[in-house]
Image (cartoon, rainbow, N blue to C red; front, side):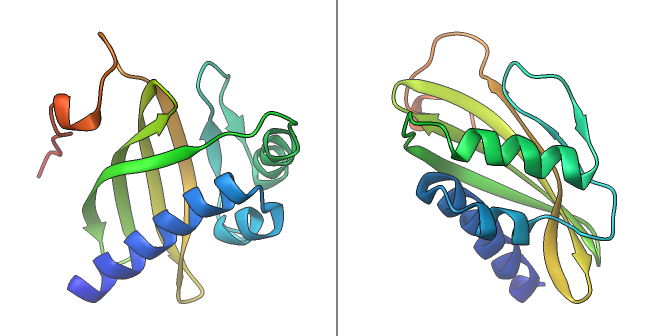
Length: 137
C-alpha cells in the first residue's frame, strides 16, 4: 500500500511541476487517455472529456502571466486498488485554494481523471494556519 501512495504522490507532484514549468506535453501525459476525465478550474465551469480538459490546460499554460503554484499538505485516500483521491492546498502568491485530484490506474500507471480547485472559505493565510483537510474513511 505504501508503494501505491508514493506513486500517487509522485504523479500529484508531477502535475504541479507541469503547471509551474508550463509543460503541456507533461500535463497531457498525466491525464487519462482511455477513461472519462473532467476538470473544474477556479471560478470556471465543469469541463468534460480529454479534448476539452487538455485544451483548457493549453490556454492556461500558454498565458503570458507566470504563476508559481505550490501544492501543500497533500492527503491521499485510497478508494480501491485502482482509484485514489488527493486533497491538498494550492498556494499561488497570497491566494490559497483547496484542490482535489482524482487518480485512477490506466494501463498500469496512475493518471488524473479529475482535478478541481477553488478558493478556501474565510481569510487566506498559510496552510499551517488552516485546518488540515479531513477525509472520510
